Image 1 (cartoon, helix red, strand yellow):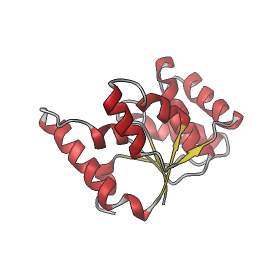
Image 2 (cartoon, rainbow, N blue to C red):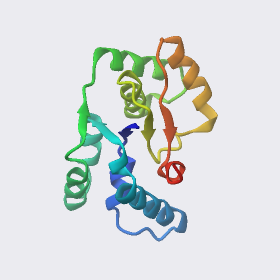
Image 3 (cartoon, rainbow, N blue to C red):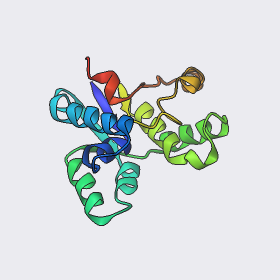
Image 4 (cartoon, one colour):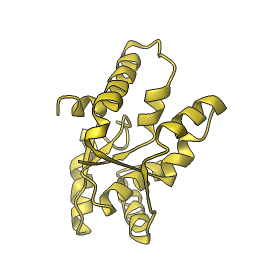
Length: 155
């Protein structure tokens, strides 16, 4: 599978152990997927992800960037920018979620199979995925599957 690695994935892999039990479980699931499953796929990311994970505490940012240093970085094409704008204009995502719209658009325009994320508010959200799929299909494109690592663990 061709998988887009969104910012939350390297963040969860390198994060310090969370005290919240759900967050800690997600961290472990993500680490397990990264260690056991990632080599079975072609992984891609974007400059947007690199910029997002470069922010914050210096040492943690370096660890996140090192983790995905060998991934193919997708080009932010005019077609991807246009699709991201259409996603935002649709009202499915708030204007403040322009990075999330760009992740969706990049994975779509580059014909990836999966967008892997823990962002369940704006990306892997069952409440919007159907409408998002229809919007993308109206543009002549196919929306990748929007999954969390937990959903891929049983692949």
